[in-house]
Length: 197
Image (spheres, rainbow, N blue to C red):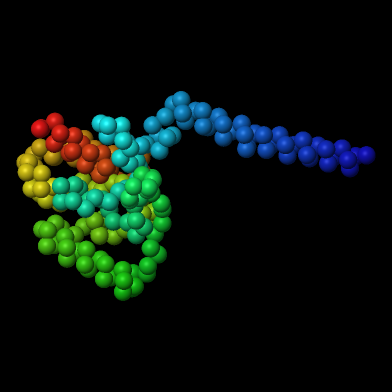
């Protein structure tokens, strides 16, 4: 009889733990996120003036035009194309430092930056571990400033305040380094162009 009671007790405890950890806790976190942090809980999706989603402020995107600041390169392709989700996929190349393909890509990228009179900083050449980094350093943004100002036919002094405005600080004021959010900065530049017309 005690054996059957112990089995019933174990089943009750298992069901209670399942109810707490699989239903109540996730539901509470979901509701709390939607109430307290709705922008972050829904992926930090940014929309343009026409309410079209242009991307997530937390996930890097590819910018190739000289009129935009370029993000850190990614070994996985950031979401692109009409059917692509703006949230991207994560991954790294896992190429060894001695891999000829990696060395060739890095040298080619560095030479391209030198041709554009941009100092080939590590974060503009090397991919991030996740492939999704949305930030570049203030220094990397400054290196690209001349190219962007020339392509947009505006003064560098008109862009500098935007760079300063879109610097995200350290996480919890101690972790990581401050970085410029590239998507927010590029969108602010587009808005500035629209307002100038």
